[in-house]
Image (tube, rainbow, N blue to C red; front, side, top):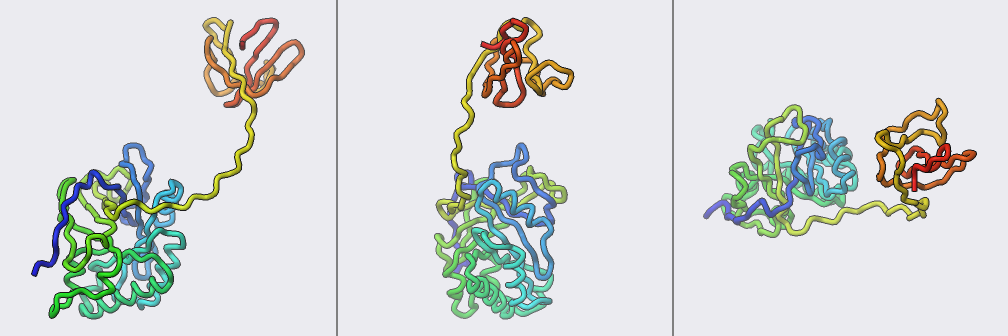
Amino acid sequence: MADTYNVSFDVNNLPMGIDTSDSNGPINITKAGAPKLYFGAAKCGEGTAKDIQYLNTRAQYEKLGLPFIAYYVLRYAGSTVAQQVKNFKSWAGSGCYAYAPDLEKTKDSGSVSKSIVSANTRDFIHGLQDAGLNVLPYTSPGWINEYFRSQVTYLLPDWITSIKLWLAAYNFIGERSTLPIPTGIRRENVLIFQTWNKSPNKFGSIYDSIFIDRDRWIGGALPGVGQPPAPPIEDGPEIVIMHVVNTGKDGLKVRTQPNTSLTSVKFKPNNLMDGTAVNTVERIQNGSDVWRKRLEGGYCAELYKGTRYLI
């Protein structure tokens, strides 16, 4: 019996995300030229070690209002399962869309039996579920088949087949491929597929400057992300649009104060040439002169020494 079956798909039609850790260095998901992201994930820790880039990475996704997933690499020696559940909850923090136990080969997974790997994984997932977290195990078809499938009945345990999964396939080539799903896992239970490939990394990484893990959301619509309530709408200043006239080739200066004193230096923009529209929000009478305050900042003379510069 085959270990997996394949589902054809085209990743170009699926929302892309990336998953990173401190091995990627600091990233910048809004960097010019970076592909648009629709979700993302970052490692918060592994065993007893925190990920030093996690908080900065998470903050970038939350600022953009994108679904965010925290993941944690489960270690099979050196720390108890109960302690690692606590570590994951504490280091990831509340409010993530999902919490992903990263199940893969580690330095210690080969030093313990397959039955211990399976039991510790099960207990870790159950501990996270008991804490009320949305658990999304991050693993590969090969790992599932090797460590969790019965070699007698060839069946998978219910705690694997009943939950959503994030699958990684390292044989991915190009932008069109098939998704290998372990036999016994329902297609609709695969939420994310990692399409790791050798595309240039444009996210500002300093250590992993060539490769980065790319993911595709295959589980239907992306989850809604809660947004803070919008601030109350307040009436803004009344805007009067005027136009520059009578300045010749020199243009109209924008000053920091409504006068021509030595303390009223030139405002940041270049002089405004004839015909330029000016958004004004306040009229200021200064003797026989009239000044206008700009919406964008600074002041322009409407009437100065008998000459009109704004109409």
